[in-house]
Image 1 (cartoon, rainbow, N blue to C red):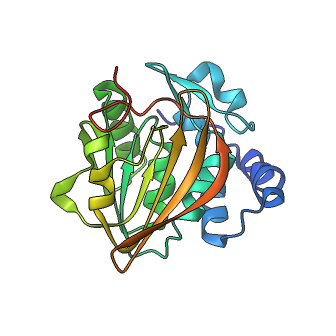
Image 2 (tube, helix red, strand yellow; image 1 turned 120 degrees about the vertical axis):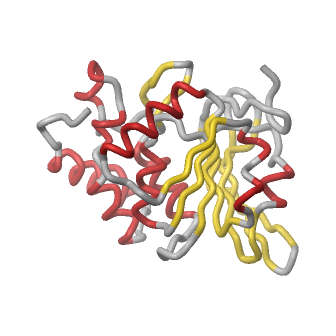
Length: 217
């Protein structure tokens, strides 16, 4: 699904008007946000809204997050380029693509198999070769490849799932929305010397993280 118009000016405007004024500073994150074509990850009918400052539906009661939230979560995990990253909630694959630009390897887990299959096909078409996919309960993480230098969770949970904490490497960063089903706080959890510390990055609103260690269906 390659669309002809690449919207480069729209991406540059998005970075200049939505991200930088709100405090996104990491040059690697800003460059990735300029490079990755968000218009390819939304439905055809919504392409005209691809670079607007809000989430968009992607089917199956899921959404693609607004660009600022994608940039904020990505900046929070402070990627240098050599990390193993676990993403919980592949969704459209847009956040996955951003992570794949900035990390060595991305392991992404999606509960809804049709979304995972669609994202995997699109990212393969776009020539991403450093992403592994799994259709699974994301609250259980992906133990086989743990520990991870960074974990990003793109759905709201009542608490931080214990398996994700267990799979976080020493010095690792985990970003996750925590709260009720209507509003959450974006938390950054950092593991240092076996102890996890939390930082609140502000309010947000995500779809529910369903699973054994999340919300029940």
